[in-house]
Image: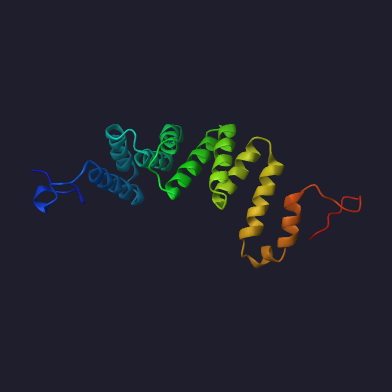
Length: 193
């Protein structure tokens, strides 16, 4: 007789009324713990099994995408991310993570236009998320919009840095973020620093 996995209900534990949702939550939590503890391939196997059993569950899709990403299997992660962001049931934090993961994965795979579209929409949905803005700035660079990417990145830097060297130049950084090509005096000497 085999013993149930850690955290799984057993008949003698008095949990005979476990619902499918409770079971899914327990199995999903176990797979996440495996990923977090470095047992990513085991987590991947369990999550793929859960995807088969619960194909419409956005949380399972998100965790499956995430584990594929951590294993360097970005192309395999994409359909799971797409299912996650297209489904219901993610918390705001999970949805933000899934959008960031999908956009970043698109960028890594060279699907730069998809990355810009995904990350742009994500920054509208989560306007205070600076990680999304940072990844968007990289994707903008990849599609030849380096000026827009740099402006966004400089704005994030100016708004969030507590580094005294950055804080001292915040007004100049904010000024140049608005117009990186600004020059004064006609001889190409920039001001504001």
